[in-house]
Amino acid sequence: MSEPIRIAVVGHTNAGKTSLLRTLTRQVDFGEVSDRPGTTRHAEAIDLKVNGASAVRFTDTPGLEDSVALLEYLGRLSGESRPERVRAFLAGPESREAFEQEAKVLRTLLEQADAAMLVIDTREPVLPKYRAEIEILTWCAKPVMPVLNFVRAPNSRREQWRQVLLESNLHAQAEFDAVAPFIGAEQRLYGDLATLLHGKRQQLAEVVEYLALEVVDRRRAACRVVASGLIDVAAMRRHISAEDFAMELRRAEFVRALHDDVGAHARRTVDDLLQVFAFRRGDAEVARLPQMAERWEDDLFNPEILREASKRLGLGAMIGAGIGVVADVALAGLSLGAATTLGAAIGGALSGGWKPLWRKLENRFSGVQELTVEDAVLLLLADRMLQLVVALEQRGHAAMDKLRLAPGQSSGLGAGLRELVRAIRPARGHPEWERATENMAGQRASDNRQETVEEAARRLEQLMSTYLSDEKFSDSRALPA
Image (cartoon, rainbow, N blue to C red):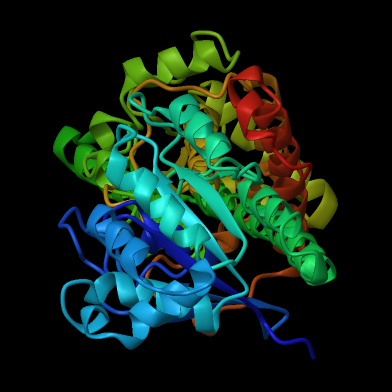
């Protein structure tokens, strides 16, 4: 087994070194990330593993703080070569006193690294201290690859930094926003590094290949999570007596409970998605996502929101009677959602016996009302979850804020989402497909449910590829699904 490639991650204080490593290794708890200067005070190693083995060993180093004075001091030391002067500095008292932090960086680069990644906060103006840092690092005679960070920020000075690096003879450069990386940015980063480490090209190629497969696997897993959550909601069926349904307060209480159950399914889906992408629970603030607030009756089931969503998604303006669910689905009072539900029941009867339809008729004649969630709700929920998956794919593991989607944002994939909802329609005839919202341990999904999950997940993957191929993602160079 090959030894891991050793990379020293260096740069000025608060340039985003720890943030970069959190994202590259998908370890949200590595190190400490804050706006305070000098957060990292000691060198700390972390590995990127490929197939369980360490492929790249990064060392997070303290920030360079007084590079101008250090460069002047190095210039006064004796030595035939620049690396010899750096070693003389490390052996002297100044490395333990005035330049203690800088000494930790240079010692790591000289003794424990094959190359350095120089992290640059492109929002900062190009000052003499940064030019001095670049020059000092080159004195170690190790390959240095600048990594331009925060390039998506509106105040990024990317082009100015590019020019400074060219003037310093650093022509191999990479761009990587540690908080919001472009899709595929990791693979390009290691590809760029391979231009500097000729002897490690094969190892780095294996890393790139592994990461590309990981992207596909994560997306596939995320689509399965969303598909399963949508099936839970589609399969929901709640019974209420005709007497209680006729009483406005009882009906409102019953509908509110159904809304809460849908909210619980959606929140669990979000938590599962965060786990797929190795984020912490709560990194996406569900209560602040549009149509996913704690009061679902004000958002996802709001008639006006549903009407607007229905228009965007190509359903027209017909979406039930305003409470957001289908009542009396068996025979009389059919709305758009009720007709859809009855059709699913008939389809289930033809494929798996007459029990689903017979149960509906029996409930009808015994005075029991059944409430289920309309297609418009499923379409809107699918749209939001799809956008959430895309947002998580482009979120760095050092992001400090809660993930929130823009209000009113739509994927514009109405036709594809309608096909998706049609794919999960068999769940309408199988209330047993709804998983419990508390503890799933020990529950086993039926083969038919799993087949429906896989089909819906496949359609979601296709929708994601279509969504990411839109020109608004042209800079991210999305990977094929």
